[in-house]
Image 1 (cartoon, rainbow, N blue to C red):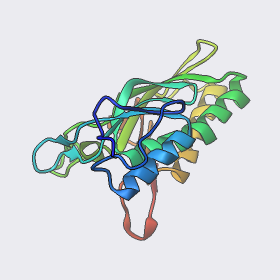
Image 2 (image 1 turned 60 degrees about the vertical axis):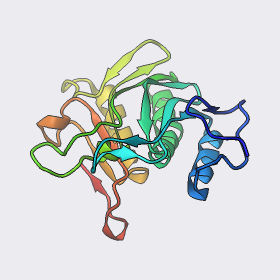
Image 3 (image 1 turned 30 degrees about the horizontal axis):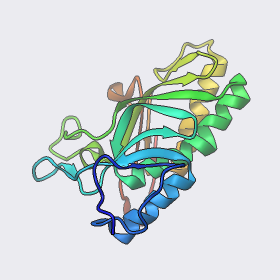
Length: 203
């Protein structure tokens, strides 16, 4: 079997080994689903940052269809897949409906990061690669939409951001953004933290 190397690129148009060495069946299935979502990504070496930080089988996600992720986001495959599904099913259609434009770039202000939840000793979901923060959305038209809460009269922008944020609850277990607290005043936070009885936290 072909050995999985950190530099291997898995995306539409690239051959994927049928059974990459070292990947559990669930990870292989996730990568197959990512390819079907037209995501471009590459496998990275395992990340180990002490007792509470790291990703066993990380991916670097750089594109979802025609939408760039900038900078490329280091995530678990499951988180990358949730982001890909949200992007294709919610973000891009909402941009086309409200702005008559596709999405060029998602500006990721944070993905994997070894840190605790602010003000606590509990590891953040970023510390396990299960979270991403999005600060800006750039349309094909060149318009940049800042996730920071728009002005009172920015009706179209507020409608767009409110829509893609609320619809994130169908794809992520945690959805936070402007208005939740000061720490989330300028970005969306999405994560797939496991919650009891399939619970969601959307604010």
